[in-house]
Amino acid sequence: MIAIDDMRCSYCGGCVSLCPVGAITLKETHLFVDESCIDCGFCIPACPVGAIAADATAAWAVVTMSLAARYDVVVVGAGPAGSTAARAVAEAGLGVLLVEKRQEIGSPVRCAEGVGQDLLTPFVAPEPRWISAEVTGARLTVSGPNDCETLEAAGGRGYVLERRLFDRALAEEAARAGAQVRVKTAAVGLLREGSVVRGVILQEPGGRWEVDARVVIAADGVESQVGQWAGLETMLPLKDAMSCAQYLLVGIDINPNCIEYYVGEGVAPGGYAWVFPKGDRIANVGLGVQADMVDEPALNYLNRFIESQPHLASGSPVTLVAGGVPVAVPPPRLVTDGLMLVGDAARQVDPLTGGGIINGMAAGRLAAEVAAGAIAAGDTSAEALLAYEAAWRDGLGRQMARNYRLKEKYGPGERASRAFARLFMVAAAGQ
Ligand SMILES: Cc1cc2nc3c(=O)[nH]c(=O)nc-3n(C[C@H](O)[C@H](O)[C@H](O)COP(=O)(O)OP(=O)(O)OC[C@H]3O[C@@H](n4cnc5c(N)ncnc54)[C@H](O)[C@@H]3O)c2cc1C
Image (cartoon, rainbow, N blue to C red; front, side):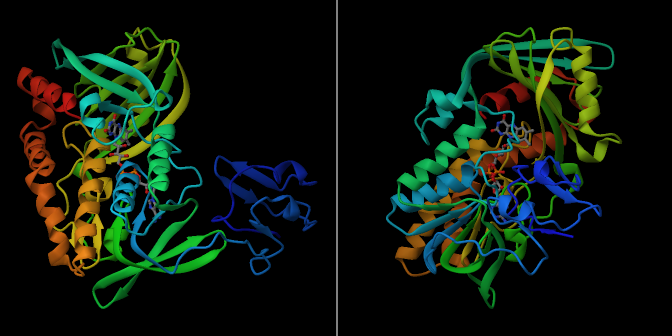
């Protein structure tokens, strides 16, 4: 039976229609071959990326675009945090490699895509191609066991992004500034000398490479492993994990300039539901639930929520998004010798709202500036990199720590209150 290299497979499905016995199936992003395979080999030359072979040892060699053996900085993960960090390192005149394990930066999207306009512009000039909608108001509905209250806020300006294009635009900016960018390239381990991180091991379709770096910036998102490999404590407690489901819902009756939030135990235990408009009668409609409070998936709550809302119930979902959000305090250490954690990997998300785009970009830039200074001074030890951790904790980190305390203070049972509603609106306006 033929062998498939999952790392190379780009799930184009081209092989499926060539199989004379129907032995190959493409399930979303995974190719499966069943026992009916007759080893005809028709699929092997049809695969554009050399992912199919007669057996696991016979794969065609794949030519690789060259990589340097050494960079000043390697950034793992091309989300908003990683691309912002890579761009800032490149702008400081240093050599930087940005690696992303997915084949398309920004896809699949795991986000409701809302950001504050004023908070975004210091990082990147807005471009129509990655802005779906501008919003000027917000409405929060809090439902308790017996009553329901609605708060309105006007005046704040925000964008609902098109993250698939936004994330790619940030990576493009990094590349224009001089960063080398690689997709379908996963960090699979760290190079270390004792406890000192001195580079990364990369796996890409052409093989495995070792790349030296004076600093590794781990921007590998909620699923971060790089920090753990370096011995940092990044384990997320269940109570600090939001489990989220979202549809891009079309044909709904919404105000295209107003964001809607819904808080209530019946709606989303420990979390909230949102409607973020993306244009005419289309919106990201989703919710997050606190993972230790539910005994059914977030998707069930979402389906029930939509059916309970007359203005949403007739909508058609054209995209399903699933994702986890760390609403936690950051790990005790964000740096170690030769390595820094940023963005969701460092749990730098607002614990009240789950917003992490701006925080990740701010942390990415801060980490890059400290890394550049440390490299210039010839000292990339944990002590030297601690300046990043201290600056984060004294700046945005202080606000996040306060919001974590408020999240704990207003336990799920106390959220149907006017005080929490006000707090939530303030936090949401600052995301
Ligand atoms: C349902 C949902 C709704 C949300 N809504 C909002 C919102 O409205 N506003 C907001 O501000 N935030 C929102 N967030 C949070 C926001 O999406 C994240 O905080 C943000 O994407 C964090 O950016 P990041 O760069 O740290 O990580 P990510 O954007 O997750 O990027 C990490 C990247 O690292 C890559 N990677 C991981 N491991 C490796 C590896 N070993 N090698 C190479 N690459 C690797 C991943 O493929 C990924 O591309 C939402 C999250 C979810 C799940």
